[in-house]
Image 1 (cartoon, helix red, strand yellow):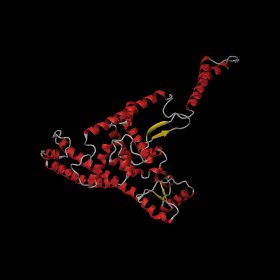
Image 2: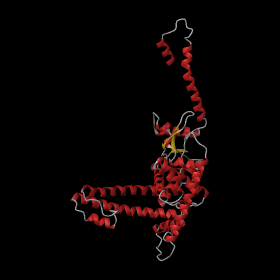
Image 3: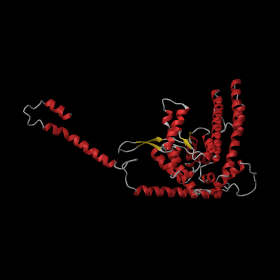
Image 4: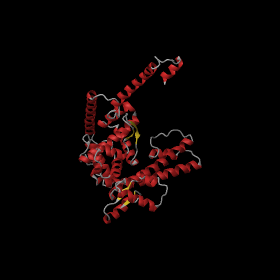
Length: 401
Protein backbone atom coordinates (compact mmCIF):
# COMPACT_ATOMS: atom_id res chain seq x y z
CA UNK A 1 0.00 0.00 0.00
CA UNK A 2 1.18 3.52 -0.82
CA UNK A 3 -0.03 6.70 0.86
CA UNK A 4 1.11 10.29 1.00
CA UNK A 5 2.98 11.66 4.02
CA UNK A 6 0.54 13.55 6.23
CA UNK A 7 0.25 14.33 9.92
CA UNK A 8 -1.22 10.91 10.71
CA UNK A 9 0.63 8.86 8.09
CA UNK A 10 2.86 7.16 10.66
CA UNK A 11 -0.03 5.90 12.76
CA UNK A 12 -2.00 4.85 9.68
CA UNK A 13 1.00 2.90 8.37
CA UNK A 14 1.40 1.21 11.76
CA UNK A 15 -2.26 0.10 11.72
CA UNK A 16 -2.22 -1.19 8.14
CA UNK A 17 1.23 -2.80 8.17
CA UNK A 18 0.15 -6.18 9.70
CA UNK A 19 -2.43 -6.66 6.92
CA UNK A 20 -0.31 -5.94 3.81
CA UNK A 21 3.08 -6.90 2.48
CA UNK A 22 4.54 -3.39 2.81
CA UNK A 23 3.42 0.20 3.44
CA UNK A 24 5.08 2.94 1.39
CA UNK A 25 4.82 6.52 2.71
CA UNK A 26 5.42 8.79 -0.28
CA UNK A 27 7.46 11.96 -0.03
CA UNK A 28 5.05 14.72 -1.07
CA UNK A 29 7.90 17.09 -1.95
CA UNK A 30 9.05 14.72 -4.67
CA UNK A 31 5.71 14.02 -6.30
CA UNK A 32 5.44 16.44 -9.23
CA UNK A 33 3.13 13.98 -10.98
CA UNK A 34 0.51 14.89 -8.34
CA UNK A 35 1.38 18.42 -7.26
CA UNK A 36 1.78 19.73 -10.82
CA UNK A 37 -0.93 17.66 -12.47
CA UNK A 38 -3.52 19.52 -14.55
CA UNK A 39 -6.36 17.35 -13.26
CA UNK A 40 -6.18 16.55 -9.54
CA UNK A 41 -8.71 14.41 -7.68
CA UNK A 42 -8.42 11.76 -5.00
CA UNK A 43 -9.02 9.00 -7.55
CA UNK A 44 -6.36 10.32 -9.94
CA UNK A 45 -3.87 10.80 -7.11
CA UNK A 46 -4.42 7.24 -5.89
CA UNK A 47 -3.97 5.93 -9.43
CA UNK A 48 -0.71 7.88 -9.79
CA UNK A 49 0.59 6.54 -6.48
CA UNK A 50 -0.26 2.98 -7.53
CA UNK A 51 1.57 3.35 -10.86
CA UNK A 52 4.67 4.82 -9.24
CA UNK A 53 4.71 2.11 -6.57
CA UNK A 54 4.28 -0.65 -9.17
CA UNK A 55 7.18 0.71 -11.26
CA UNK A 56 9.39 1.18 -8.16
CA UNK A 57 9.70 4.92 -8.82
CA UNK A 58 8.02 6.18 -5.66
CA UNK A 59 10.18 8.34 -3.36
CA UNK A 60 9.40 7.23 0.17
CA UNK A 61 10.09 8.58 3.65
CA UNK A 62 10.76 6.80 6.91
CA UNK A 63 7.75 6.23 9.16
CA UNK A 64 8.87 6.74 12.80
CA UNK A 65 7.76 4.54 15.66
CA UNK A 66 5.51 5.69 18.49
CA UNK A 67 8.38 6.67 20.81
CA UNK A 68 9.96 8.89 18.16
CA UNK A 69 6.60 10.44 17.32
CA UNK A 70 5.99 11.23 21.00
CA UNK A 71 9.44 12.81 21.27
CA UNK A 72 8.75 14.89 18.17
CA UNK A 73 5.49 16.14 19.62
CA UNK A 74 7.16 17.12 22.89
CA UNK A 75 9.96 19.00 21.11
CA UNK A 76 7.58 20.74 18.71
CA UNK A 77 5.25 21.75 21.55
CA UNK A 78 8.13 23.16 23.58
CA UNK A 79 9.41 25.13 20.58
CA UNK A 80 5.96 26.68 20.05
CA UNK A 81 5.70 27.66 23.72
CA UNK A 82 9.18 29.18 23.74
CA UNK A 83 8.31 31.26 20.69
CA UNK A 84 5.12 32.48 22.35
CA UNK A 85 7.04 33.40 25.49
CA UNK A 86 9.59 35.29 23.42
CA UNK A 87 6.81 37.31 21.79
CA UNK A 88 5.34 38.17 25.18
CA UNK A 89 8.74 39.23 26.50
CA UNK A 90 9.36 41.41 23.47
CA UNK A 91 6.00 43.08 23.93
CA UNK A 92 6.73 43.65 27.62
CA UNK A 93 10.13 45.17 26.77
CA UNK A 94 8.46 47.53 24.32
CA UNK A 95 6.22 49.13 26.98
CA UNK A 96 9.01 50.89 28.97
CA UNK A 97 10.74 51.83 25.73
CA UNK A 98 7.62 53.55 24.35
CA UNK A 99 7.20 55.56 27.56
CA UNK A 100 10.89 56.63 27.78
CA UNK A 101 11.50 54.89 31.10
CA UNK A 102 15.19 54.40 30.45
CA UNK A 103 17.26 51.27 30.60
CA UNK A 104 16.36 48.78 33.34
CA UNK A 105 18.83 48.56 36.25
CA UNK A 106 18.85 44.73 36.06
CA UNK A 107 19.84 42.26 33.38
CA UNK A 108 16.63 40.22 33.66
CA UNK A 109 13.45 42.28 33.73
CA UNK A 110 11.38 39.19 34.56
CA UNK A 111 13.28 38.13 37.67
CA UNK A 112 12.52 39.24 41.22
CA UNK A 113 14.30 42.57 41.03
CA UNK A 114 13.09 43.15 37.50
CA UNK A 115 9.47 42.59 38.50
CA UNK A 116 9.87 45.15 41.29
CA UNK A 117 11.24 47.68 38.78
CA UNK A 118 8.40 47.03 36.34
CA UNK A 119 5.80 47.39 39.09
CA UNK A 120 7.17 50.81 40.10
CA UNK A 121 6.98 52.36 36.64
CA UNK A 122 4.57 55.26 36.11
CA UNK A 123 2.60 54.19 33.04
CA UNK A 124 -0.74 55.10 31.46
CA UNK A 125 -3.66 52.78 32.13
CA UNK A 126 -3.57 51.04 28.75
CA UNK A 127 0.19 50.48 28.97
CA UNK A 128 -0.13 49.10 32.50
CA UNK A 129 -2.80 46.65 31.34
CA UNK A 130 -0.58 45.55 28.47
CA UNK A 131 2.44 45.03 30.73
CA UNK A 132 0.51 43.13 33.40
CA UNK A 133 -1.10 40.93 30.76
CA UNK A 134 2.31 40.08 29.27
CA UNK A 135 3.65 39.18 32.71
CA UNK A 136 0.72 36.84 33.34
CA UNK A 137 1.27 35.19 29.96
CA UNK A 138 4.97 34.73 30.73
CA UNK A 139 4.19 33.09 34.07
CA UNK A 140 1.70 30.74 32.44
CA UNK A 141 4.09 29.80 29.63
CA UNK A 142 6.91 29.21 32.13
CA UNK A 143 4.78 26.66 33.95
CA UNK A 144 3.84 24.92 30.69
CA UNK A 145 7.45 24.80 29.52
CA UNK A 146 8.55 23.41 32.89
CA UNK A 147 5.99 20.59 32.57
CA UNK A 148 7.24 19.74 29.09
CA UNK A 149 10.86 19.82 30.19
CA UNK A 150 10.00 17.42 33.02
CA UNK A 151 8.54 15.00 30.47
CA UNK A 152 11.61 15.43 28.25
CA UNK A 153 13.87 14.74 31.24
CA UNK A 154 12.06 11.48 31.96
CA UNK A 155 12.40 10.48 28.32
CA UNK A 156 16.10 11.40 28.28
CA UNK A 157 16.90 9.38 31.38
CA UNK A 158 15.51 6.30 29.65
CA UNK A 159 17.34 6.95 26.38
CA UNK A 160 21.05 6.04 26.25
CA UNK A 161 21.35 7.84 22.92
CA UNK A 162 20.34 11.21 24.36
CA UNK A 163 22.63 10.74 27.38
CA UNK A 164 25.51 9.85 25.05
CA UNK A 165 25.02 13.00 22.99
CA UNK A 166 24.97 15.10 26.15
CA UNK A 167 28.54 14.06 26.90
CA UNK A 168 29.65 16.63 24.32
CA UNK A 169 30.37 19.94 26.13
CA UNK A 170 27.90 22.60 25.01
CA UNK A 171 25.17 20.13 24.00
CA UNK A 172 22.09 20.39 26.21
CA UNK A 173 19.02 18.23 26.65
CA UNK A 174 17.04 20.22 24.10
CA UNK A 175 19.67 19.82 21.37
CA UNK A 176 20.07 16.08 21.96
CA UNK A 177 16.31 15.49 22.16
CA UNK A 178 15.57 17.51 19.02
CA UNK A 179 18.29 15.62 17.14
CA UNK A 180 17.00 12.18 18.17
CA UNK A 181 13.39 13.23 17.47
CA UNK A 182 14.31 14.25 13.93
CA UNK A 183 16.67 11.37 13.14
CA UNK A 184 15.10 8.47 15.00
CA UNK A 185 17.01 5.32 14.08
CA UNK A 186 20.62 6.25 13.30
CA UNK A 187 21.08 2.93 11.47
CA UNK A 188 19.13 4.38 8.54
CA UNK A 189 22.17 6.42 7.52
CA UNK A 190 25.13 4.57 6.05
CA UNK A 191 27.45 7.57 6.40
CA UNK A 192 27.67 10.91 8.13
CA UNK A 193 27.26 12.65 4.76
CA UNK A 194 23.80 11.14 4.36
CA UNK A 195 22.85 12.40 7.81
CA UNK A 196 24.09 15.89 6.99
CA UNK A 197 22.02 15.90 3.80
CA UNK A 198 18.98 14.65 5.71
CA UNK A 199 19.27 17.57 8.16
CA UNK A 200 19.73 20.09 5.35
CA UNK A 201 23.23 21.21 6.41
CA UNK A 202 24.88 20.32 3.10
CA UNK A 203 25.66 23.12 0.59
CA UNK A 204 23.76 23.23 -2.66
CA UNK A 205 25.70 22.39 -5.80
CA UNK A 206 24.97 23.85 -9.24
CA UNK A 207 27.18 22.24 -11.87
CA UNK A 208 26.98 21.35 -15.53
CA UNK A 209 29.76 19.85 -17.62
CA UNK A 210 33.33 19.44 -16.43
CA UNK A 211 33.71 22.88 -14.85
CA UNK A 212 34.23 23.61 -11.19
CA UNK A 213 31.27 23.01 -8.92
CA UNK A 214 29.62 26.08 -7.43
CA UNK A 215 28.61 25.58 -3.82
CA UNK A 216 25.87 27.86 -2.59
CA UNK A 217 23.92 28.09 0.64
CA UNK A 218 22.83 25.06 2.63
CA UNK A 219 19.82 23.17 1.32
CA UNK A 220 17.72 23.38 4.53
CA UNK A 221 15.93 20.24 3.38
CA UNK A 222 15.14 18.72 6.73
CA UNK A 223 13.88 19.39 10.20
CA UNK A 224 14.21 23.09 10.94
CA UNK A 225 14.00 22.34 14.67
CA UNK A 226 17.03 20.04 14.70
CA UNK A 227 18.98 22.35 12.38
CA UNK A 228 18.23 25.37 14.58
CA UNK A 229 19.19 23.56 17.78
CA UNK A 230 22.45 22.40 16.22
CA UNK A 231 23.16 26.01 15.23
CA UNK A 232 22.59 27.19 18.81
CA UNK A 233 24.79 24.38 20.12
CA UNK A 234 27.53 25.48 17.70
CA UNK A 235 27.68 28.92 19.34
CA UNK A 236 27.80 27.28 22.76
CA UNK A 237 30.55 24.88 21.67
CA UNK A 238 32.58 27.82 20.36
CA UNK A 239 32.82 29.16 23.93
CA UNK A 240 34.04 25.87 25.43
CA UNK A 241 37.71 24.77 25.27
CA UNK A 242 38.22 21.80 22.99
CA UNK A 243 38.81 20.72 19.39
CA UNK A 244 35.40 22.00 18.30
CA UNK A 245 36.27 25.53 19.37
CA UNK A 246 39.52 25.31 17.42
CA UNK A 247 37.53 24.19 14.37
CA UNK A 248 35.11 27.10 14.78
CA UNK A 249 37.93 29.65 15.03
CA UNK A 250 39.73 28.17 12.02
CA UNK A 251 36.64 28.56 9.82
CA UNK A 252 35.82 31.98 11.27
CA UNK A 253 39.26 33.33 10.34
CA UNK A 254 38.59 32.51 6.67
CA UNK A 255 34.86 32.95 6.15
CA UNK A 256 33.35 34.80 9.09
CA UNK A 257 31.38 33.78 12.18
CA UNK A 258 28.08 32.88 10.48
CA UNK A 259 29.64 30.40 8.08
CA UNK A 260 31.75 29.06 10.94
CA UNK A 261 28.64 28.44 13.04
CA UNK A 262 26.98 26.54 10.20
CA UNK A 263 30.14 24.50 9.59
CA UNK A 264 30.35 23.70 13.31
CA UNK A 265 26.71 22.57 13.28
CA UNK A 266 27.56 20.25 10.42
CA UNK A 267 30.59 19.00 12.35
CA UNK A 268 28.34 18.29 15.35
CA UNK A 269 26.00 16.25 13.15
CA UNK A 270 28.95 14.17 11.91
CA UNK A 271 30.18 13.77 15.49
CA UNK A 272 26.75 12.62 16.64
CA UNK A 273 26.66 10.03 13.86
CA UNK A 274 30.03 8.65 14.98
CA UNK A 275 29.03 8.54 18.65
CA UNK A 276 25.75 6.75 17.98
CA UNK A 277 27.00 4.26 15.40
CA UNK A 278 30.07 3.32 17.45
CA UNK A 279 28.15 3.46 20.74
CA UNK A 280 30.89 5.47 22.40
CA UNK A 281 30.86 8.62 24.52
CA UNK A 282 32.67 11.75 23.47
CA UNK A 283 36.44 11.25 23.77
CA UNK A 284 37.01 14.79 25.10
CA UNK A 285 34.06 14.81 27.48
CA UNK A 286 34.29 16.48 30.87
CA UNK A 287 32.93 13.95 33.41
CA UNK A 288 32.00 16.49 36.07
CA UNK A 289 29.99 18.54 33.57
CA UNK A 290 28.27 15.39 32.31
CA UNK A 291 27.33 14.35 35.85
CA UNK A 292 25.94 17.82 36.47
CA UNK A 293 23.76 17.55 33.34
CA UNK A 294 22.43 14.17 34.41
CA UNK A 295 21.70 15.47 37.91
CA UNK A 296 19.73 18.37 36.44
CA UNK A 297 17.69 15.86 34.46
CA UNK A 298 16.97 13.87 37.59
CA UNK A 299 15.83 16.98 39.46
CA UNK A 300 13.61 18.04 36.55
CA UNK A 301 12.09 14.55 36.46
CA UNK A 302 11.09 14.85 40.14
CA UNK A 303 14.00 13.21 41.97
CA UNK A 304 14.39 14.37 45.61
CA UNK A 305 17.17 16.78 46.45
CA UNK A 306 19.98 15.35 48.53
CA UNK A 307 21.66 18.26 50.24
CA UNK A 308 24.99 17.65 51.87
CA UNK A 309 25.99 14.74 49.61
CA UNK A 310 29.39 15.57 48.15
CA UNK A 311 30.06 14.99 44.48
CA UNK A 312 26.48 14.32 43.45
CA UNK A 313 26.28 17.33 41.13
CA UNK A 314 29.80 16.74 39.84
CA UNK A 315 30.59 20.26 38.68
CA UNK A 316 30.80 21.96 42.09
CA UNK A 317 34.42 21.06 42.83
CA UNK A 318 36.57 23.94 41.59
CA UNK A 319 39.79 21.92 41.37
CA UNK A 320 38.15 19.15 39.37
CA UNK A 321 36.49 21.62 37.03
CA UNK A 322 39.73 23.50 36.34
CA UNK A 323 41.65 20.26 35.80
CA UNK A 324 39.14 19.13 33.20
CA UNK A 325 39.24 22.52 31.49
CA UNK A 326 43.02 22.24 31.29
CA UNK A 327 42.73 18.83 29.63
CA UNK A 328 40.26 20.31 27.15
CA UNK A 329 42.72 23.13 26.37
CA UNK A 330 45.46 20.59 25.71
CA UNK A 331 43.15 18.70 23.34
CA UNK A 332 42.44 21.98 21.54
CA UNK A 333 46.16 22.72 21.19
CA UNK A 334 46.77 19.21 19.85
CA UNK A 335 44.01 19.71 17.26
CA UNK A 336 45.53 23.00 16.12
CA UNK A 337 48.95 21.38 15.71
CA UNK A 338 47.46 18.48 13.76
CA UNK A 339 45.68 20.85 11.37
CA UNK A 340 48.83 22.94 10.94
CA UNK A 341 50.92 19.87 10.08
CA UNK A 342 48.26 18.56 7.72
CA UNK A 343 48.01 21.91 5.95
CA UNK A 344 51.77 22.01 5.46
CA UNK A 345 52.05 18.61 3.76
CA UNK A 346 48.76 18.32 1.84
CA UNK A 347 48.96 18.77 -1.95
CA UNK A 348 47.88 22.08 -3.46
CA UNK A 349 44.42 22.22 -4.99
CA UNK A 350 43.27 24.35 -7.85
CA UNK A 351 40.16 25.36 -5.92
CA UNK A 352 37.30 24.11 -3.82
CA UNK A 353 34.99 21.72 -5.57
CA UNK A 354 37.30 20.92 -8.46
CA UNK A 355 35.92 17.90 -10.29
CA UNK A 356 38.00 15.23 -12.05
CA UNK A 357 39.07 16.45 -15.44
CA UNK A 358 38.63 20.13 -14.63
CA UNK A 359 42.32 20.92 -15.17
CA UNK A 360 42.29 19.10 -18.51
CA UNK A 361 39.17 21.01 -19.46
CA UNK A 362 40.93 24.29 -18.62
CA UNK A 363 43.98 23.28 -20.69
CA UNK A 364 41.85 22.39 -23.69
CA UNK A 365 39.94 25.62 -23.31
CA UNK A 366 43.23 27.55 -23.32
CA UNK A 367 44.36 25.74 -26.47
CA UNK A 368 41.09 26.57 -28.21
CA UNK A 369 41.47 30.22 -27.30
CA UNK A 370 45.01 30.24 -28.69
CA UNK A 371 43.75 28.67 -31.91
CA UNK A 372 41.04 31.29 -32.17
CA UNK A 373 43.63 34.02 -31.87
CA UNK A 374 45.56 32.57 -34.85
CA UNK A 375 42.53 32.32 -37.13
CA UNK A 376 42.43 36.02 -38.13
CA UNK A 377 46.03 35.86 -39.36
CA UNK A 378 45.27 32.79 -41.47
CA UNK A 379 42.20 34.48 -42.94
CA UNK A 380 44.28 37.53 -43.87
CA UNK A 381 46.76 35.38 -45.83
CA UNK A 382 44.06 34.32 -48.25
CA UNK A 383 44.07 37.77 -49.83
CA UNK A 384 47.81 37.96 -50.59
CA UNK A 385 47.66 36.53 -54.15
CA UNK A 386 44.10 37.63 -54.83
CA UNK A 387 43.71 39.26 -58.27
CA UNK A 388 41.54 42.01 -56.79
CA UNK A 389 42.70 42.49 -53.19
CA UNK A 390 40.05 44.11 -50.95
CA UNK A 391 40.43 47.44 -49.27
CA UNK A 392 42.27 47.85 -46.01
CA UNK A 393 39.04 48.38 -44.03
CA UNK A 394 37.54 45.18 -45.45
CA UNK A 395 40.66 43.23 -44.48
CA UNK A 396 40.36 44.48 -40.88
CA UNK A 397 36.69 43.53 -40.79
CA UNK A 398 37.46 40.03 -42.11
CA UNK A 399 40.26 39.61 -39.58
CA UNK A 400 37.98 40.70 -36.77
CA UNK A 401 35.33 38.26 -37.95
